[in-house]
Length: 304
Length: 304
Image 1: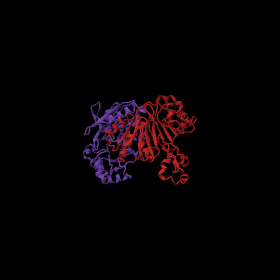
Image 2 (image 1 turned 120 degrees about the vertical axis):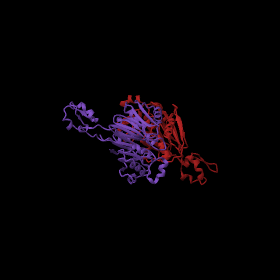
Image 3 (image 1 turned 90 degrees about the vertical axis):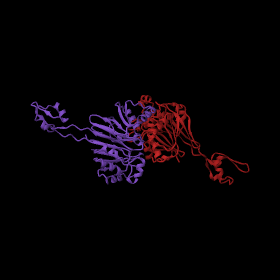
Image 4 (image 1 turned 60 degrees about the horizontal axis):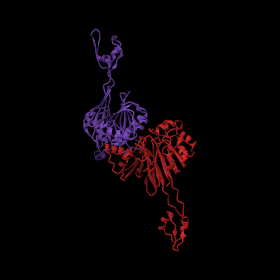
């Protein structure tokens, strides 16, 4: 399965008829990670034909409404759909109080456990790891405590070269596991077969960096260096640079500069101010600095 | 201006691609009252081309998510749009804690005052009155504290009969105000002109009763007696009467029975369970009891 990012919403601040506030669904190594959850995200997930039951981890960048006000409704729907699996919610300190206050007053019987992972560090930290993926925070500079998230696939297993392996009847299927991990194979006569002769290189691992609301900050460059795909907000064009600084946001030109300096593969822009009726202007500005920049359409699926 | 009810959403529980949870906009005597505010209501208001700035009163029936989770986002948008006018929010005790917790943690600077009117009475009470309209609570029987709302236009002014008035030069335009209120006019010679000769009957006043989530309850009948328009939830058809009782909801047949016993003008159904793909079945069932029943379409404008 390819890695897929679905853009569920990319509006800043106010939802509109044709778009939604920030939310993305990342499908990576068979994991389904929801990133930010503005109002209306559950309907966007339905439009994207996403399976609610596969979402076990939700990462919230910050507590401004356009990034998290869809969470109470989504979690209520999880319960109504009969969910029993625990749900992991990562976000700034305070997210637990916000959600639990709402659920207490609305008498929402969740019926499943929410495992809160509240964040307050100003340094990048590993917040999730399993056998296939790691997730790190990317501390951002906004008006309120805010993190981006870096998703990294672990190195994958090497592919078996069955043409070569079949030449050695001594190699049994129970040995494949070690071969995939890169181990050499020692024949009974003591001869050591190099792994490179029995396997081929693994499918490359990919990485994705989500950089939500932030001022231009070169501090993030070492963390996101050479990711395959970078989402970086670009609320304004560069002629409104002062407005961007004042409100804790970036311009398209700044997003592209970060992408270039971090040597990323591709840049997706988003969080466009509603003042721009034609969002293609962001792509034009960004490409003056970093050619592989683009503005997504709503519900676009980006494979990488 | 006619009285207009816009159905912004009528889903129960889970929002879908083609519908939204409960929310209605009532335009009565130039007032714009928002009734319930499920997730996505602000987008529905945009689709209905409603003017956000005209909404100064929001009535929330109960704190289940499908009736109030759109409120934090709507209020945030009010702020972003530069609102300064105070906003009155009516709803169950707890609504203030819910909203203020969210706004504190999301660092939402509202920039305008929210006047909370928290309700906890089990009896019907007048909660709003100005020179044209009165609003009363309708205590309902749900799993959680819940009120419907009754909106009543005050008697309107009588219309001037200018053909008659022009026969009496003594009557000046400064006298019209008293004539519209029904007062007789005394000529200088002491002769009293009856008001009925100088004016005609006023435009009839209208009334609307919103009965959100509730079990079948005849206790509401005296409160909603003879309203012009009744909204009564009908989550299920009557073959699921047990389910309706268990979950604190009504069937279409029950809603129609209430409409008939209360002698209302017209019944609008809503809050349909997602299990029914074709909602016209509710209308068919209700009409077996009360002919003037109907199922609205989304964003339908009902004039009365």
